[in-house]
Amino acid sequence: MTAAGSRRILVLGTANRKKGQELAGLLTPVELEIGLELKTLADLPAALQVAEEGGTFAENSVRKATEQARHLGRWVLADDSGLEVDALGGEPGVASARYGGPQASDAANNRLLLEKLAGVAPADRAARFVCHVTLADPSGTIRGESEASCRGRILLAPEGAGGFGYDPLFEIVEYHRSFGTLSPLVKSCLSHRARAVRAMIPRLGELAQSAAWDGPF
Image (cartoon, one colour):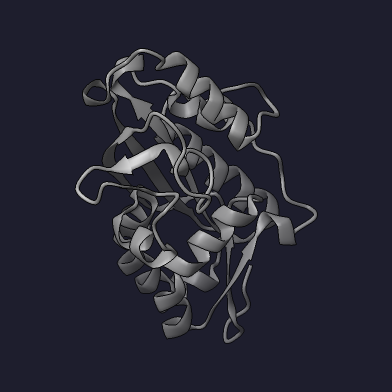
């Protein structure tokens, strides 16, 4: 819990370095405006390993935010996101990060996705990225939620080394470019995560500038 008058801490509910950097970049405006100090789970040795057993992005996001917030006694902003491919009935969905197995790398997940889409024409490879964001206070009470998506299609082969996860395979059709080839600045305008976080910023700013941030909880 943050004492009144001290710097407000917001924990980003991820230990993934690249995702943490992306979230921190998206939150820069509110971080600077209200003096937030951002931390990730990688900065907190006592952080929980929350099981992502929900059937939807919303369920997993809520679980990651509320359980971690109660455990750490901190405000936590957590997201759950993933890829849904129309031709695969919405796969990999909530299993996006572990599509190729519990410890699968991004490269392994991408290989499996391409294998499952072998023979599917480009016109039939429509997909969307989805992100659900949840903000929880130190008691584990949900203080805000948002969800957004970004539509595109899956390429026949990876393009670019930027981003993470399925970014090199996900093409923004209007740009004829994959997320893996777009700059972080452009991605921060278009991505599912960027849209969901932007929708949360007014609520986050409202709470952080009020007595609500300092409890009691």
